[in-house]
Length: 174
Image 1 (cartoon, rainbow, N blue to C red):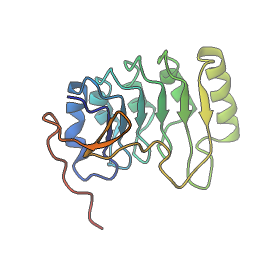
Image 2 (cartoon, rainbow, N blue to C red):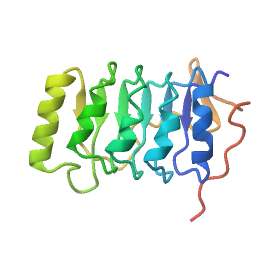
Image 3 (cartoon, one colour):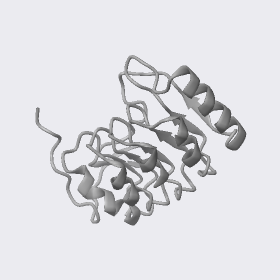
Image 4 (cartoon, rainbow, N blue to C red):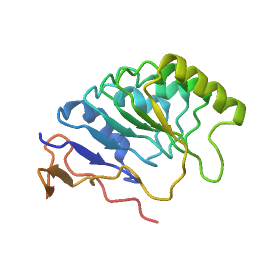
């Protein structure tokens, strides 16, 4: 399977596809934004060792959930914006050797208190100095590079059907 980018943002039944992520050997980027994901759902995400870019923002994720991702040794970018992580999440982030950027934002306020942010930054500087942080909230989806039915192919986007994932259900109706 040639799928290397998968966007399941707001897809109603996206959680059903999570166990299949590890089967997509060329998959590098996954957006699991606002799919009502919880900590236990990240156990299966943590088995997708090929991932380099993961966005789990706008979900009910805590530090315990991020701990399930420590096996993602190739992960370079992680977005945990609008989650419930605390400054103690540094303990899991520091175990990801290729991590280079973490986005930690919250709508209209900081994700951590000023003291919590200082503590977090001090721990990360000591244990994972290569990681940079993005604290800026934006109303757009910064890392969107594809949708559930498109895959990056050379110089453009091409329709793609996955024999592993099959077809995702339509976007949540409002």
